[in-house]
Length: 91
Image 1 (cartoon, rainbow, N blue to C red):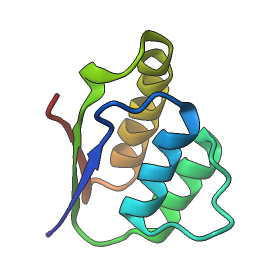
Image 2 (image 1 turned 45 degrees about the horizontal axis):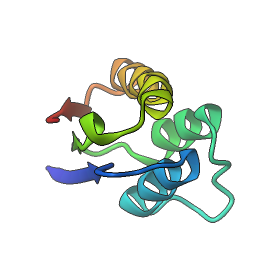
Image 3 (image 1 turned 90 degrees about the vertical axis):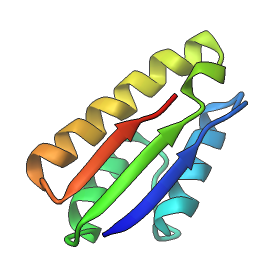
Image 4 (image 1 turned 30 degrees about the vertical axis):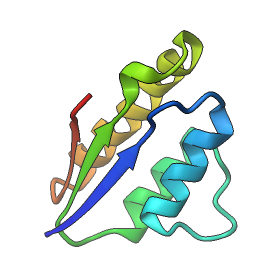
């Protein structure tokens, strides 16, 4: 099982979040930095067992934490579509 760590510690901006996600998953250059693109890429590109650990959420500014909840919803939807992909919020 592959383990991915998404560390959002001290992110201040929306685009930083997507940069971390893009780098961690090695998403293609055309990745659109939005929720729909995230859903499409995670659903379509990964079919093996993969576990993602998510850290640093408690360090995000309030508005970014609110947006991160939407990203976590995408992760939950991806898991429902592909149970081999799991996501765990650590902090």
